Image 1 (tube, rainbow, N blue to C red):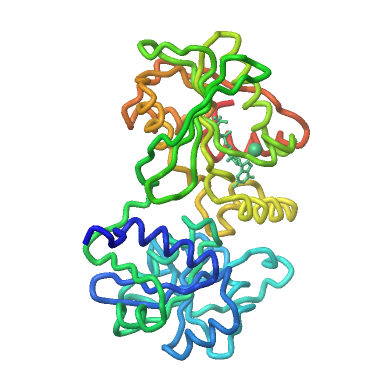
Image 2 (cartoon, rainbow, N blue to C red):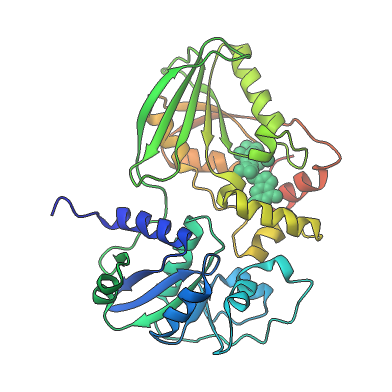
Length: 361
Ligand SMILES: Nc1nc2c(ncn2[C@@H]2O[C@H](COP(=O)(O)OP(=O)(O)OP(=O)(O)O)[C@@H](O)[C@H]2O)c(=O)[nH]1
Ligand SMILES: [Zn+2]
């Protein structure tokens, strides 16, 4: 049936549902469950979910560790939601905002053994929807029938294990954009097949496809790039990279919409608020239930290849970016350090990245 959305498209639809607070039905290897994101859950929907069975709250092992709950798995922890627990209880387990003010959330009871695929996938969906990585799940016997009867998205992953990287990109439009640093600017917009976040490539000058091109692989940072926040070094890095390309007369700026190292601006602000409570940038991500860095840098090499580039001189201090480029078919002939913008407000942040995330100082 050519009209029918495929698994990837259904997953994208499921993410949109979760963001709106609409539950979806997830099927894996014969098991099925209603799934709702903890962050967007309403009291009415929680009550309806309970009419199908006893809910579990799936969270990441990172979050479980903060809550001192046993995960019994390296992939997911399934917290038993007490009968009298309300939405607030669920959201307090999911959200570390009040951890310090109200530390007594436990002891949390967690499930051990049994089917964990649904819980694991539900958390992955919430994460890629840039919500808090926590989902309420209620097992149901008849997945497709439950979805159909309630008008919910049915996503069956029994046959296909979803690879969580972004789906293939196609170039949508490009045009000349004269800029302060260079009159010769050209912006290309790339869109993933699943309708997700778009990413950009900005050509500066006239880069020669046959030679390694000076390239900056930059992740969106609204606070640093646009507001000039001094809490990180993103703004100065962006501008220094563009100026270097303009000086050379050629370069490519890859501007990937991976705000907050892939967790989205809302979660980044949650992380900032934890940083105001004394946690560093890595600890804050972990308390929220994320890894230090949730970005997929393959997007960058895919864009470069589709523009006809094969080799780069990469402006970065992050060895992971170099490794990812090389592992995905773009030769990195040189790493060009990009050390600008260090100040009183971001000194500790940069030191943490060097100590914990392997950034080169
Ligand atoms: N989660 C989180 N993200 C942050 C924080 N501070 C900055 N960011 C994000 O981190 C990313 C920084 O991106 P980049 O500068 O491209 O990457 P990098 O890993 O620092 O590597 P290089 O700058 O290339 O050396 C952006 O997406 C910012 O939004 C933070 O405290 N927490
Ligand atoms: Zn930044």
